Every structure is written in structure tokens, then in C-alpha cells.
Image (cartoon, rainbow, N blue to C red):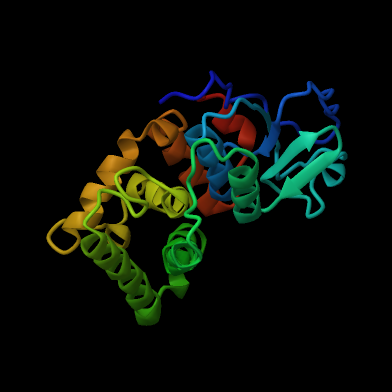
Length: 247
């Protein structure tokens, strides 16, 4: 499975840049390093939907962004000229309804509810990642306990399901919604974030399998890009142009 050839690394448009004219193709307003926008990209890739990417400089936002995103952030998809939908989870459910050919979300109400519970359970992982990035002094025993409790939850889910992915033998809705946190944790060399096979053997295998999934692998960023992003973001001096030079 390979999605149509997409240019993920278009220039990040900022203040003063004109809005590209509507092409008639489904459009994603994105930021190449945003984990929430990545959820939308992964959903589109997994469903093999053709689309175009408009990357946005979120530090220096273009003046027209509020006309495409009511919250002034990404992700937003434009499905018709001027008809936009925002928020990653809402977008994923919309795409499931409109493009049902490759299903990612269970139609069973209970299974669908559990998928959303799994997504909620990933919050401590994102919190831990963000704290390591920006506020390491705020990490305490409670933060670490919540992080490891979340990892233990996912290890247990994989054991109980007996499948390679949370969605079964192929990734599904929950897998793609939580993957951005795991990808970022894996890219950081921080002892507090390490997921060790001695305790989380199924989760380690799960992460390795997710890296191989075509929807994921085609959107992966080179390690030098992630390293530079983390270094700049930690100091609060992140500039999207410096990352674009590496793409």
C-alpha cells in the first residue's frame, strides 16, 4: 500500500505569503513537525486518499489562516473551496465516513468507544515528551508514574488483544492517533523516555512494526531534522526555515 505521491515538504507559508488558489483537490493545512497534524496525514495515507499539503509557519502565521482554520492552528482540511474542517480527531472521523473503502474505525459502538479510550490513555506520554522538551524541571515522581502507567496500559492492551497492532493485524484509528508521540519519544536520547524491552517487549515490537507501516514510513523525518528541531525547540528559538533547509 502506497498513497499517491505527495509532496510533504512544501515551503511553510508565513506572514505576507499569498494563499495558494484552490486546485479542487482535498487540501491539508499542515506543519511538518506538528504531531497533531501528523495524525491527519497518517489517516489520509492509510486510506490512500489523494491530497495536497499546504504547510504553515505557526510562529509567523499567514494573515489568511483564520479563514481556513477557525482556531488559527493545524491540522485543517479543506474539502471544498472555503469548506474546512479542523481538529485531528474530528478530521479522522470525517474521513472515515466520507472514504469508507479502507476502514480504520470499528463500526461496533463498544469497540469504537474503546479506541477513543486508548487515545485518551496516551495523554501522559505526550505530557512527558513535552516536559522533557520545554520544562524538564517540572518532571516529578507523579509525572514519571503517569508515563510508565500509560506504557504499561499499552503493553497490556497488546497482550490482551494478541495482535501486532492495537487495531488488529493492521494499524487502525487508535494506532495512527497515538503514533506521533511514540515516534518523537523514540527519536530523543533521554533516559527518562526510554521504552525498554525487558519490561515492555510487546510495546517495543509494536513500535518496530509501526515504523514499517507504509502510511507511517513515507512521512518519517530524517533523524538530523528531528535532532535539530528538538535542540531549537528546547531553547525556544525554533525557526521553521532552519528545518526546511534539511528537508
